[in-house]
Amino acid sequence: MTQPVRSVIDILDLSPEELDRLMDTAEDIIARPERYREACRYKKLAALFFEPSTRTRLSFEAAMHELGGAVLSVTDAAASSAAKGESVADTAKTVSCYADIIAMRHPKEGAALVAARNASIPVINAGDGGHCHPTQTLADLLTIRREKGRLSNLTVGLCGDLKFGRTVHSLINALSRYEGLNFVLISPEELKLPSYVKNDALKARGIPYSQTTDLEAVIGNLDILYMTRVQRERFFNEEDYLRLKDSYILTPEKLKKARPDLSVMHPLPRVNEISVAVDDDPRACYFKQVLNGKYMRMALILMLLNLQPA
Ligand code: NCD
Image 1 (spheres, rainbow, N blue to C red):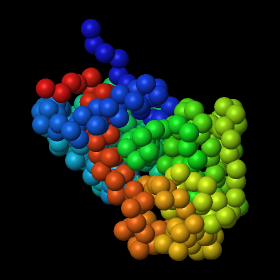
Image 2 (cartoon, rainbow, N blue to C red):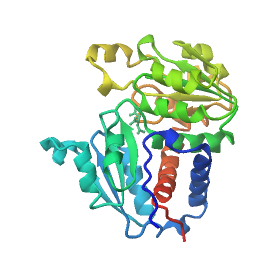
Image 3 (tube, rainbow, N blue to C red):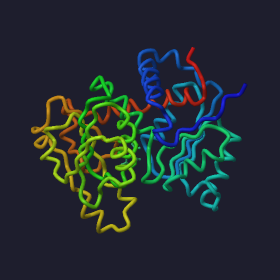
Image 4 (tube, rainbow, N blue to C red):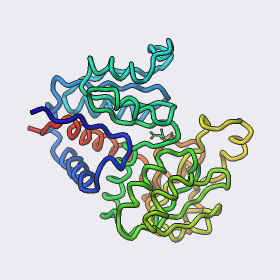
């Protein structure tokens, strides 16, 4: 019997039990990489990236290579048939003829969902506009579990562009299913968390949260500080971007007020939000997130292709 095709468009497509299993698989990959070297032999991942990316695309590609599979890539929308006016639906049907699984990044919210509805192979959303970014959340969850030993009972500060930052939306959705979470939303007035995320993830579940514009006033209360870049490409005018881009800059000085066991996270790329001097602080976790992202993407590819290691 053939298995139904399963896609991951939203982090909520994965149950907390499945997230646990993915994190356990990632830990096993870290401990015993040799078991996984042939797991995706003869399988192909199509990386369809219609928006800039370094980490997400390369980590999907590295993940597939480390599983013994092959990669087909679109890295430039202008060089693909999208530039001729091809729809996402037709692209998905076409790529289903060549590959076994798709990772898609697209500037339009909902593009990955349209792809999944039209593809005959699994589709992984690698970021759709300002909406969501579930595989960054997989990287974030493994990082939190490794750093803190738990995903429950945490005070999580999210700072920066909470409006357009898709990694923030997916992370809040994922964490809202664990016990004892408390969110501190730190942003300029103009870049507050969209009400659909606030209503669906926080208010509907009765999860405590507070909102502030002042990072320094709250930094001492946090277990996790998740910094984000102001998303220039989603702004309607450059003036607003220039006014808001340096709203928050984390420095060693500001970190003096933080707990010694704080974890500083960032999905990257960083622009100015974290001074380079913070990188040597043992609380800085953002490059660990990068590595964890590769292992979680390996685990997700295996799950969606129903493959087992040797
Ligand atoms: C993020 C994204 O693309 O949303 N980057 C990433 O995938 N790690 C964050 C960002 O671009 O600011």
